[in-house]
Figure 1 (cartoon, rainbow, N blue to C red):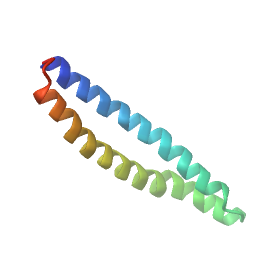
Figure 2: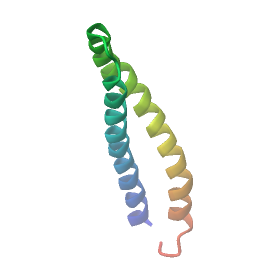
Figure 3: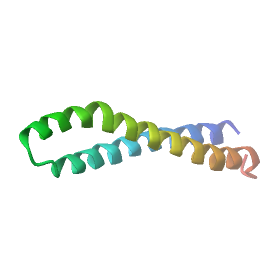
Length: 81
């Protein structure tokens, strides 16, 4: 049972890393299409503080909810535990 719970925690940690990876590149990709220098400077700050924060919050919240529903069910009711 403890092994399954640790596995669930590990998967959630991995999802946070995945979210960081996806969000970093997504925000960088958005910024690539901003043409003026002023907007590029603004976009750098937006990417760092707003885009990345909002993306990470959304991504981890969704990941947490989905993984909690799926993995806690598996953890609690798995025949392996």
